[in-house]
Length: 331
Image (cartoon, rainbow, N blue to C red):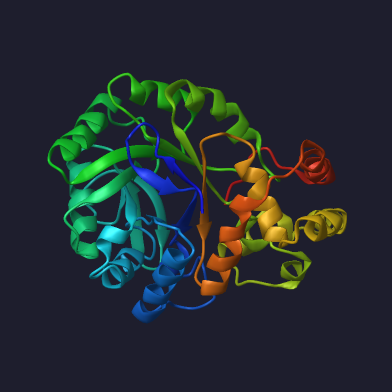
């Protein structure tokens, strides 16, 4: 495994991070519900393969993901860099409507009061005294940036968090937060099928030494291999609502996998590894956030950091999907 500093925070993290959205279950991810024993095994696999960075959020299963992690981290909290989020909550005490799901109304609130309460709730659910990193889950203009930053800086001074970042944001947001704060990372959607937002963001991240943490690089599984294209999902499942279900998109993906097959054989890796290695090649401080629920997935994903794609192979991968790329994905 390779490691890098998280922004300019002095915190060293593995380049691959464990995403735990799937652990939360619920109607948006309908494979199965996870158990504490499965979460424990997952963390053990991460340690075995050098992954020390875990990402979660309060709304992942409305607390379920954090609660499972809390049980799995007992006695081994010191082994991991733990990251959660703030702004999205279902307390019903203010904020802007964000969505309704599984009997809960989730609001987005970046007020100082909400940010502090979100962190305190996460600490309780995960039974820990501090979080290494907290991300503003959805940047919001309804409250002054200075108010949000001061709350985050106050949590740093109190020892409840070590650093913080932004998600679902724009490069202008990073500029604005940096005027009064010190943002270590931005966590944004980015994939070979939709690379535009990330590439537009990289120069601003570079200016501040900010880590760019990518989620969605495997497009919810659609870039793991041609077999995945045969799967079907319930209407509530997020995987049923993304563009790659359309027949013309699936045909484009099938052609891409055919063109990538020689690369898969050349590098002795999985299709997932090719896509992950492509993402890591795009920015020097890239962090790869991958949702994993099985030890086998952890083992396979860890291999991607050792793959150094040539410029020609990167160009081939991009050219093979150019006709089906999407500028903006609304999931």
